[in-house]
Image (tube, rainbow over all chains, first blue to last red; front, top):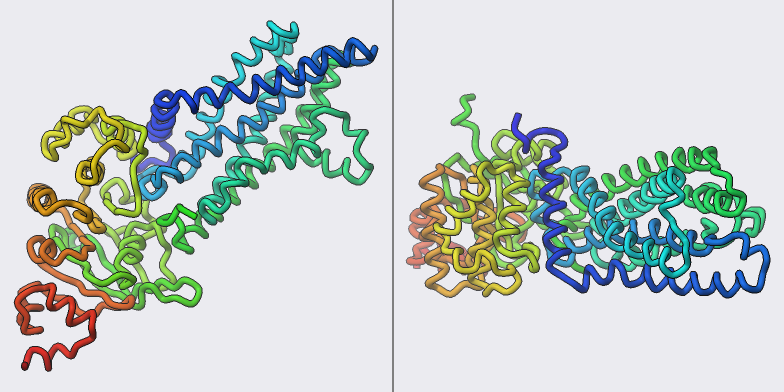
Length: 270
Length: 253
């Protein structure tokens, strides 16, 4: 059986990753955009934390909570954005028809977008984490295994949201583009990035605990404030993520099927 | 049935409805391997929708499509690597160079010896001088040649072309037609060509299917169509069909 007939082809995934890499390296504004906002955010919250720490004993002891939250939030947000922008590049260049007519499977397309979200994240976030060390003495990498658990859970959520948005874009065209930029901000208050879940009204806490990133941000606070790694929170987040990822993939395939019925794959404009 | 008896493309009572609009209404035809067929029709006749259903991009409301023996769209991954297409409704990424674009698509189609294949296509289609230029910086004619190169990358057995020479000057269009004829001859490929250009259809196609309002109005060789309508050019035949003239009365006159 040839590579083009097999069910899943790493060669085709590699072709798509190469396509996005060619685009990224050919455009310095795209590169700059990856680093710009994470740097601005980290600096703003870092300086705010420094100011608050000088005036409040609790924050002086809980060093790095704000910067840690900012960096982890950026993994979540930029992970989804990296996925969605790579997908949008196909819509903007009217290339979706070419891809859907090629032997590229939807799952291979998704796999390539997942890889590119990590590549884009690495380009944007690694320099920012080093700047955090230089400016504020906060070393995200020192979290070690905990950071790996945080990252895995956050990137899984970001992929799930990215996959769902890609399905909506295929089905509804560029009219759904704004969702790619804004959908994750719905998670910002609900996943308790900057404050504990206990701050929320009781009924809203149920909603928060249904979202995998909430466990990560609670876990981060437990680690940075109480110096305890909450493996139980990470496992619960992972379980929710598995369900979320499966649901997003299922929704994507249903929306793709619907796009074929509606004929929207040939008309990927507005 | 022997493999050589299986039509390359078989369309049977194909229907596509979008809410209240019927884009394709009970279309049937069968194309033997190694033939070039023209799909003619005015705007909104259903040509592009028919081609999209053959490619598996659009799911029919009713009827069946079979390409190289595979039912579309359900079995499309059995045959997509043996098909390709060119359409004005799609583009290639503008920032990538021509070589990068062709290389990515060649990898998607599992083309062996990618560099060699690109070099041969560049020579055949006269792409060499802009092979390393961003695709978005090319003229309309150059872009069409690049799209054609992408369509021929995997040496497809079935080639679907939607307005392949639209926006080209007559010289370049003629040159593209020659390349298509050469390719069909060399590979015994089946080509389905949607076009508004009657000269193109007359020159390339051994069979013409004329569509109007989602239905097939006529289906024959160019010679027999001319004779039956009593006309000298396919353009006149096309106008007769488009304007609903009674062809027998016209022929008698």
